[in-house]
Length: 343
Image 1 (cartoon, rainbow, N blue to C red):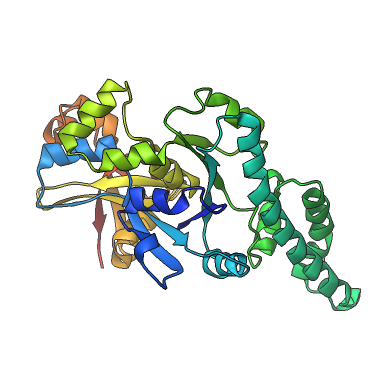
Image 2 (image 1 turned 60 degrees about the horizontal axis):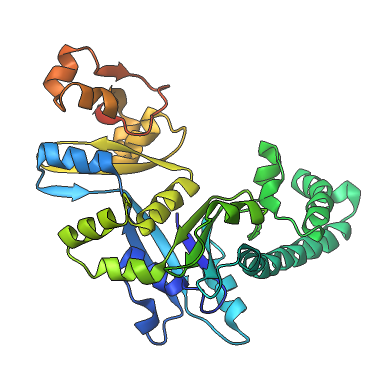
């Protein structure tokens, strides 16, 4: 599970990577491929930490990937090192212009390169499949033979694969392909301090249906150099609730189709990362496989119910808000869970 950061040269992608992870990838000479981890901002987690004052805290985290590459072989480096990324941040240079149309053009430049790369993959696959006799085709190849022309036609129109609808079997047949435009994307517009006040207009000009976040990496870098109290004062003076980079981390987490449930106590408060729609035994298995194998019940209270009971498990239990859930329970974002198991 990781998010790759893509952008044209000088768009600010390495600066954004540094702001989110604290790692100065540009100073890692000779390292083209740099990974970093960013904690997911979550007020619920922070409140639980305040209540329990644990010896250890473990927030949810998002891994990010930055590639330092330039010149003729830059695209090869990106393709080799980001082929396994589960989603992308597409950062756009908006600080050299405040014009929405020019920002949209910046977005299209890299998107067209990604579409072209996908087109080449599709054409190569179509050519190979067509050489296989119909009678000798496996079910997977037959399905791909039907799908590839549809995907090819869509890409030729300059549109991304993620716009298409696929059945579950069709998705499975495409898993072996590292299509760039099939993966989810978060668009980040890096603006100057005095540019682009009409932020909503950017989303209207970029025909991708992807979430858009506007940030000034220059301002955010300055914020990172302040103390926590100074940061609060600075943001308050601008009437801003939180730094933009925190929104980007949170959006990246959601982009991966993830959510968090919590385990709490004086020893540790931890946010466990699970896919949306996961059932209780599988969620328990994230802690330890023995929890999944020996799962009996999950003792669950929703975060809001817990807080409405004064942030007290005793009061939550007295109010009947703590539930015992079985194997078919679908874990909800923000659940506070204690598992019962036997091995």
